[in-house]
Image (cartoon, rainbow, N blue to C red; front, side, top):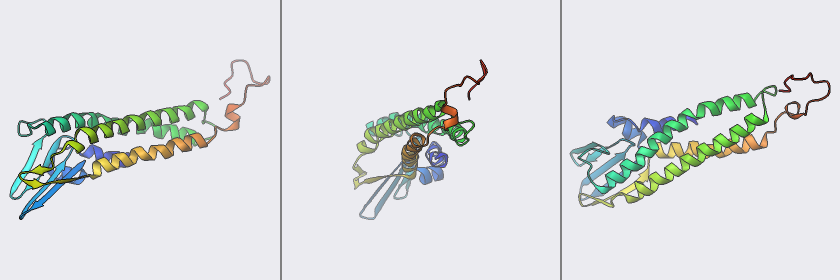
Length: 197
């Protein structure tokens, strides 16, 4: 999952080639020999319109439309979310590793895995939905008189896939029981104060 999220994080770059490879939205239009290709990243918009190059920051003066303001706001939330999705995957991996050993698996680890994975999945889905509502659906159908069509890019798709994989993660956490030896109540033979874990 981390690798998928890295594709979304790479879209934070201002490098034109990186944005073209990891964009969140791709727009294209063709009319009377005029070709327009636009790549929307989380910080920049890049592309080409005939011979001219498009390359500007979401919050720059060159991008002074309502669409730019909406996409800037939506991408701001996505920046934090993709970075947190990457960072929170580290404790998720440690929880999975802990649960993979009978001696260290506990109910606490099981429920922490379920709760943190669910909360991470939910917050990412809300943010992606916000990006779709504020930016993707509000993009102009026309640019310089050319009809435009938009599709999701690899950055958005990879983060969405990483989020959907969390459903499988939650199901596995729920389905795999904690080892019986870890859930037994202490017996009379257990020394007072000794850990049962």
